[in-house]
Length: 145
Image 1 (tube, rainbow, N blue to C red):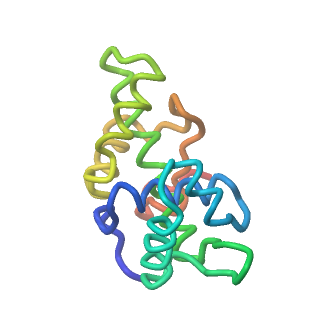
Image 2: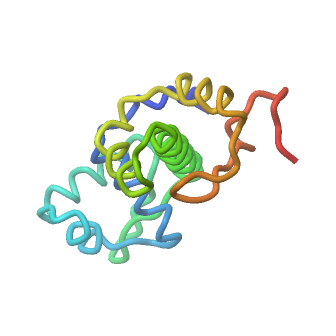
């Protein structure tokens, strides 16, 4: 498996993978286009790039779903969002403000930085946006049971 730096994808691609993971099923291109208010041809181009990079499977006439690599990466993306949102909420932003603010810059925060922030915060299990999972992201010395 390729080492994840957290900086592999553009903000739009990050949003698409998180969206597909949250749906938990095959998602049609038109559903993604309308959710993000993007032209379907632009969405198709982005999805084809994600598929070529190994993150998605294209299911003809049905849409796209995550590969194992895509699922693991999307889980990291959700974890990163929740840790960064929790961090900002500790410095005066409301839950909603923190979530919105993190959405503006999260694609530029490395996995290494997220792991260090998570460790400094004591490996929180819950953030302002939901549960924070660690089992696929931790070094062996810090596994939660």
